Amino acid sequence: MKNVSIITEFVLLGLSSDPQIQTVLFVLFLGIYLLTLVGNTVMILIIKADARLHTPMYFFLGHLSFLDLSFSSVTVPHMLQNFLSQKKSISVWGCITQSFFFTLSGGTEACLLSAMAYDRYAAICHPLLYTVVINRPLCTGIVSIAWAVGFSISLMNSLFVHKLHFCGSNIIPHFSCELPPLFPLSCTDPTVNEILLAVSCTSLGLLTLPPILFSYSRIISAILSIRSAEGQGKAFSTCSSHLTVVLLFYGTALFRYISPDSGSVLERVASIQYSVITSLLNPLIYSFKNQEVKTALQRLLRQQKCASR
Image (cartoon, rainbow, N blue to C red; front, side, top):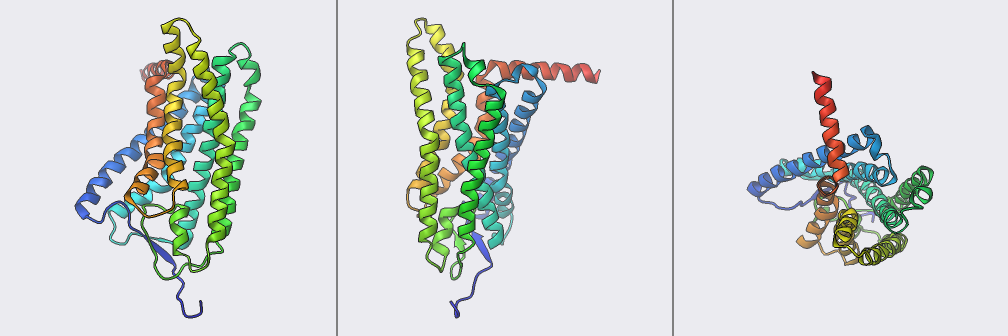
């Protein structure tokens, strides 16, 4: 290590090295990011402004919208900057900080999606006991636990990353500083870090996936037992949007973190899906698929018109 220079910054290869393609990608991801900001902010404002939406489902949805704002804002602004910059670099400390908040947002969102699955199970399968079982103190406790789990996983992995020494190649074949692409650049042995990340992902999966699988198996069973086709359609539409979000988020995230890091284009596409696209789709799915949200938005717009007169 005495004859090896320690690097102080990384170079993110991004999605393309072609300047023309980078310009197109800048416009595309700027549009996606702005829509994400507007969509999730509107969802938070609607839920806060309309008393009819002060229910457990929308309490979780409000926190999900805030997480999507955070998740997207961790990586997209710097990615947009790199599209227009010749020097696509980020300091080592900046990279580790970005990976900390990225892991925090992703881990917390996984826990929150699990809680939302159980909320839909209680609402559909036990409607009479729903307001008793899923009350506000329980929801607050669940959200607090979700943040605590996400913070703990992120903090542990970040502390161990700080012990690594980076030298030699400083090129990251990715558009952001996720943990897997950092390990191959370390001069010191990253085996402990890889084991810790694998244990963290496995533990998070064992914590969040069983409630999701249990909840949706019971929901599907309850829906199939409904005799009328209209009743089946209404019940399924209640949870189909959440199921879509879960499949998009978990499918791509599991693929990214279970498979060995190779720097392939497919890995970058998977990362874009769960860190950028899912944050965009969440408010769109919930607003267009949910009549209560659309009605609340219409009421809010009418109130704004009346106030401006």
